[in-house]
Length: 240
Length: 330
Ligand SMILES: Nc1ncnc2c1ncn2[C@@H]1O[C@H](COP(=O)(O)OP(=O)(O)OP(=O)(O)O)[C@@H](O)[C@H]1O
Ligand code: SF4
Ligand SMILES: [Mg+2]
Image (cartoon, rainbow over all chains, first blue to last red; front, side, top):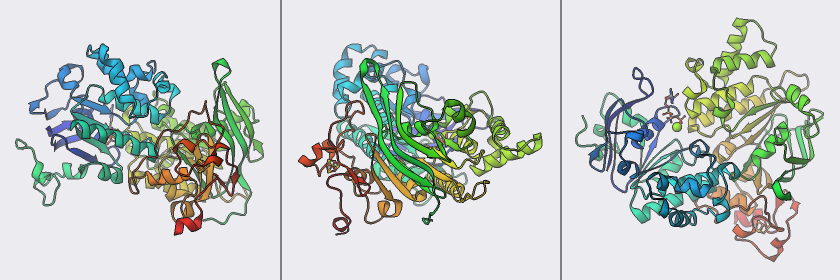
């Protein structure tokens, strides 16, 4: 289970952009979080991906509270989570060939010898041909680079995938292909998914359930207590 | 919104762009593109990422790298953009004749200066407005036109969410009141309400006459992968595949009935989550290694032997076996 309990986070302690948000994702479940531009979805996704330490609140991952974020996170925690961001160019080292980009997490965890096999295994279903794998990011299109970033996110076989609008800059067909690849991985491994974005049609079609940012932040009534709320049955037990 | 007797604002004939690569190799990024955009008209250019859309835009702006070769003509207000020298492009074209709304706004904004200071500088360069107070007001007005919140004007680009950076870039592009607006993915990263707001704002600019006498409006060339945004704003749609325009159609018949005629266009619409949500099988060909015949053949369900020859562009569809309106309706 991935439990975000009363998370408050942001860039200025006096004015956090995420205030007291709680959300629980069951193992293997795909949850889409919809919210308007600038609401703080990406910030929350970064908290869930262990990339941004919250000001307060708890992230419980598969039963254990997370204590370290970024490079303070224990390797076993980091490898349980794969992340795909909206802008593949900002999150890929321009000097690496795609094959090395995909294998980066294996190298970082001292499993270099698995790289060749694992890259080949992932590349084929994602349509990454040997020719593409030899190129660097500036020599491929956004769609091709995003496929490589997805392969990188999957290379350690994470139990959780955190996606921040991974298809926002892709055309309809490339979007459908990327979602299909993610769903194939989930079907094969039972991994859970937390996807944030603003494309309602896409997230509803893709995820088991979607929640709206406003339903998580409604201040007067806790979201889980609101009649008809999709969270009603799923409120974390320990949440205030 | 479709009566348009005026001469086109932008007229493109046989535009091709090739990149020369080391070893005598070349990449055919755009091949033989023909289209017009009239005043008061919006043409949406759609297609798979990497198919050549942004290269086409860069060619019009004279922003191609040194290893690019162009051919053809692109007339804008009596000037052939492809033949103009850099001095003309820099002083008369970019910002004044063509307002550019770029694909990655964060990279387009100057990182070390606030949005307010960038807007005020552009107002000073491109408009007759002068005097501290007037420039300040003009900058704030430009921000408001693009729905950029006044409270964020004194922020630096890195302090903005993706959506806010996009609106800052849009505000900058609208300052000069150029007759041609060129928007490269102006809505990526925006939520649905903001997408609608942004395209409606662009539409309003297209429908508003420029200050020049005799002009009836601006023209908009919008490059996008957001088909919902394209449907909302466009009069005409041009579909690009592997560097070629494979279909140019009226937006109404393209998005509604009878629908697109080229098999690629139909696959693209069908991939939408509100339609079949099924990707087109396979991948687009490499622009450096295009087949002699139709470039879509390896992915096309209608392929026959005829498709080994490049299809001619007749009736605005480049396909040997286009869907016919009768068959689609049935
Ligand atoms: N590094 C930063 N420093 C200061 N403020 C920031 C920083 N990054 C984001 N913000 C601000 O925090 C708020 C939430 O940002 P966040 O990126 O989480 O939004 P979002 O919901 O993902 O928006 P979008 O849909 O536009 O991507 C915004 O007001 C943004 O301007
Ligand atoms: S020319 Fe042939 S292969 Fe190409 S799109 Fe038309 S039917 Fe398909
Ligand atoms: Mg975001």
